[in-house]
Image 1 (tube, rainbow, N blue to C red):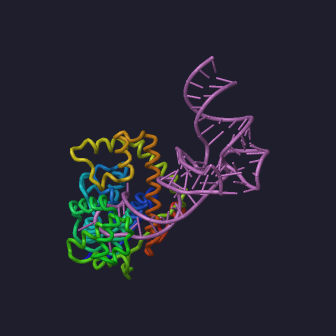
Image 2: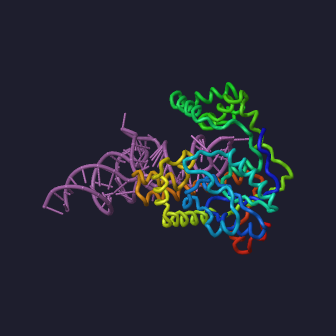
Image 3: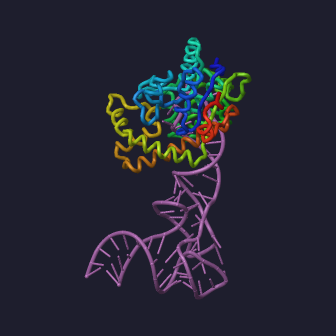
Length: 305
RNA sequence: GGACAGGUAGCUCAGUUGGUAGAGCACUGGACUGAAAAUCCAGGUGUCGCCGGUUCAACCCCGGCCCUGUCCA
């Protein structure tokens, strides 16, 4: 059992700060489409400034889906996202409109393009127990355990990659079958899906400049106050939400770990690192069609149709 | 002006009883299937402040100079 690859959708993606949101709205308007956000952090209500969500005006201009659907204290997962996205696609098509995915979470993108196996959900107690084992016996100990029940996964995963090793052990524990038997989706490129993946592309130094300016703008717009408000709630940010770039660093700042200037500089640095990792995903996907943003801004978005 | 400490990678710093040097972070590349804005892996990028001396050989020893910090005048 797995989520199948999605069909006949357009995707607008690219590294953080590339300008996806604005181009997405323009493209959706020109093609009678609705937008499904493909962003793991924009799912959270109240995390607005640091995730650079579309503005109220943009959201009024084009219907946006899968924004603001969970509370910041909730956990979430790729599989939940994929399931929700498939539902939204059907719903939008029932209205006779087309779908445009906009966002920069590459794992979600790949899960949509290639499909995703339906495995057991995360078991926090199980994970905590194995993490304790890893801390006590060292990461190699878990890796050796995996090698006994799922040799292909053990072969594929680095011995220090404790997080994925734990997931593989979790799948075996819950299903009695090795994860490598389940995970076949990402390796084969489906044919004739009708999907189109546009990757907005900037020269590295220009993107870095844009990131620096955007982070400055986020702080000017009140990112620190937003985080302060989130921390003042009864329940603190979930493990997933609290690790978002801009949020994690500001939380630490508010806890007295470092001053504001250092925090701003660190958020810029982490955002640049995020953009670099996103780039690694896009390069690895044969589906990627790179679109130079310089040219796009100069000659209009018709080349995306 | 004097005393002391220091000047080694982009940054913070180790180190060499004399044989031209290495960690963390940054940076670059890669991986990624229910935490993914997370996590993991690989790669060393250098006038060892400057000038001279000793030596087969100086980043290290000696002399002078420059710079930074602290203290004393």
